[in-house]
Image (tube, rainbow, N blue to C red; front, side, top):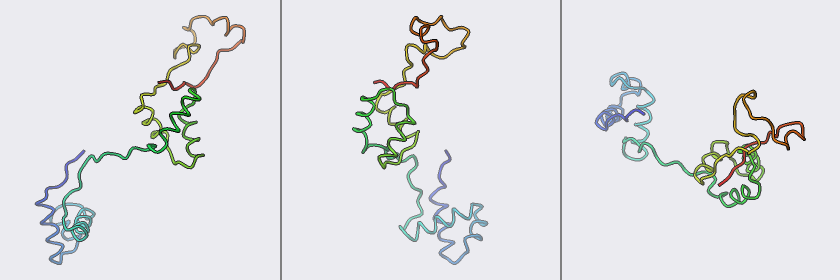
Length: 149
């Protein structure tokens, strides 16, 4: 990520705008973008400084309010997929995204485990022969991965 412009430059730009220069003329004079000049001048007029805001602010943790419900739901039905959790959250009136649910599960130490019957991913020709249960049913079980602690 790039570094913010220096405070010295910001102060000179704001002073030029306050002295009556147009944002376009000031931007051309200092070889910076017009939008930067506008933002710095607006910030100076509203809060009294054109200083850059802190970089890398902490994100608000999504789904904190739904933590107890989510953990109970996963405990009740451990084979839920992330997409199913997203749709259930939306049905409850909580806006959620796939990424938010993924980060929640990662923070809580939940991971995806494949079924023993699926035996992992790989080419079909190199799989071991099916078990007796699979032979009797005539097909291999294909279920979504389950969430486990």
